[in-house]
Amino acid sequence: MTGTQYYNEELSTHWTEYDPDSANQLLDEAGLDQRDARGFRLRPDGKRFSPVVETSDAAHAKTLELLTENYARVGIEMLPRVIDRTQWDNNRANNDFQMHWIPFDRMTFLPADPRRLMGWDGYGNEYFKWYSTDGAEGIEPPADDPVREIWALWDKASQSASIEEADVSVNEMARIFTEQGWVIGVYGEGPVVNIVGNTMENVQPDLVQDDIFRGIGPARTQQFWLKQP
Image (cartoon, rainbow, N blue to C red):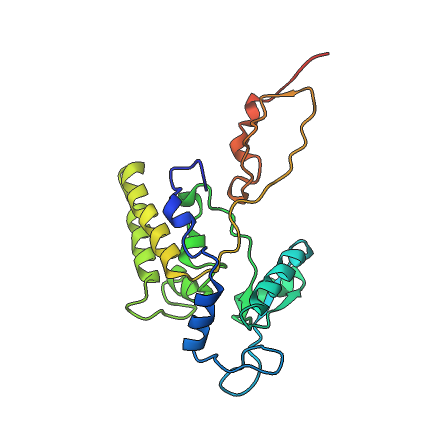
C-alpha cells in the first residue's frame, strides 16, 4: 500500500497490463483453444470452461459483473455467485470451491498479519494448514514449491534482531508472492468514505482503512478533539 515501507511501485503494477491478445494466446497454449458457437472456450472433455467465482458480500456483485464481461472477451464464461458468509467460509475451509473473490486487506503493515502472503484464506489454504499445524492437517506442498520460501522468510523475519533486518525478509516475501501470481489482482487501493463533523479536529485527510488496524487504528484517535462553539 502506498505510503508504507513495504510499498514497491514495480510490484504494484505486476500482472496488470491489459493485453487480451496475450491472454488469448496463453489460453490457447493451455489447451483451451476450442470454442463453442457462442465463442466460449471448451475444456478437453468438450464442456464449456466456466469457473464459478464465489463471494460472501452482495456489495461485490457489480464488480463481478464487470469481470464477467472482461473474461467473456477472451472466451471464458465466468459464473459469479453471491452466497452466505458461513457457506463461503466453509467452502474455503473444506477446499470445496473453484475461485473466491476476496478483498485483500491487511496489506498496510505486512508483519502485523503476514498470512495473506503465506496462504491462509487468500490462496493455498490447505498448504497453510499444513504449515501452521506442523503437518497435522492440510496438504504438504511439493519440496520445490515457492510457498516454502515464503514460510522460511517469515520464520527468519519473526526471529530477527531488528525491524530493519526483518523488513528485508518481509519485502522478499511480498516479491515472491506477487511474481508467482497465485492471486489474480483486480484493482488496487479503493476509496472509503469517512464522514467527519465540522467540529471534529485532527482527523487525517489521508486516513487508511484496513482491517488489520480495525479501521480507525492508524487515525491516532487520542489526538482527536471537538471544537467548542
